[in-house]
Length: 492
Image (cartoon, rainbow, N blue to C red; front, side, top):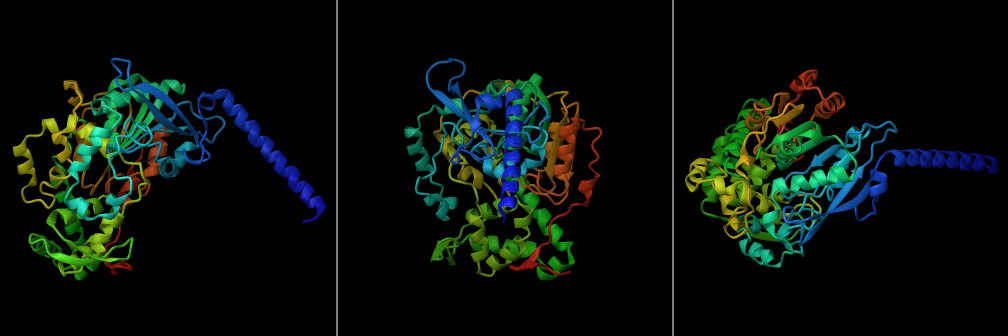
């Protein structure tokens, strides 16, 4: 590069930097987040986001004693003339930390960041907000398939004794009052809510308790407060598996490769009843191991795989191989987890479901819902077992009443969702005066990244008008093609 060219480049660089600084200064003069938050350190969040904390009392009613430092991450709007109403993102779980997951979540919401701030908060008990985390420090749980089957209940008892927290104060309603404190701390008068899975419950509770602060709501994979987790998991996951069977039978290539998929899977369940020991290569270590395969272990893997239509496309091939004594591919799906350490708090899960859901489930209902379904009582035999001793917070009776509101609410349900199928979205929408429920063909759990759904969300955020929304584009979506081999989909 010539000296002249280098001088021009340096001059242009200086102009760009000055312009960026001027823009930042202008923004800092108009938005409270620049006074109350700081650019994120690498360990705290994305480098182009702002991070901070707000301290709240653990016992909000007493307003004394132990405090919780809530972690906040804000991705500032990209436009100088940004909208004043941000998008608050409510994470799923229960137990997911939205701020801790910011490097993963902000890219999902980037297109909405053009016009407004995107706000992510680690709900109390999650992420880096005094997490009720009972996972082993050495990561051994992530490496142990047997832990899916023989659930480590005693580890939760030991964890409970060491927590610097009273788990009774980590229910959804209390947490949503924290979130409103954050809203006011950041200077927002009106906000938009996006809630996925359990996050939809959180958003509904926030709407009920702080309706005046809400501009609009998007719910994706609707799990209302009266859902009674996980009572209907066996029913809803069986529905998803049956739909997969039917879609395979209706697809010429899949039907040719797997002519009797229901029969093959029935044969697999019968084989698993004897808990056969099978050899497999551990997908992370490469070591050869063996394991006693049980119906419960395989049920958990199948259930988790049905969440994603892309992963579910593998199931006909993998279930057939497992039935023929080759479980390697199916077991590899058990390691299909990409959450960073600390992103999901299992103790927080218990503080919610043990207080809000389990007390409203009768033992006879568990037996009735399990009968003839592949998940059977798996969830109650594993994740729910620590509820026998986990402290339960108080939940008001009206917590379970349907949420009613005239605020605009856009609801999405995946047609093949194994845990929050469309019936839940329809039930919630029936009580909302200004709601639109969109069922996304071929989708599983959480539809935000499927087809034209992001465009629909963007249009809704722009106008906050469900009636004007043209949702016809979702009708062009369908389930991804099934794989007949590990290298790709079946050919027509």
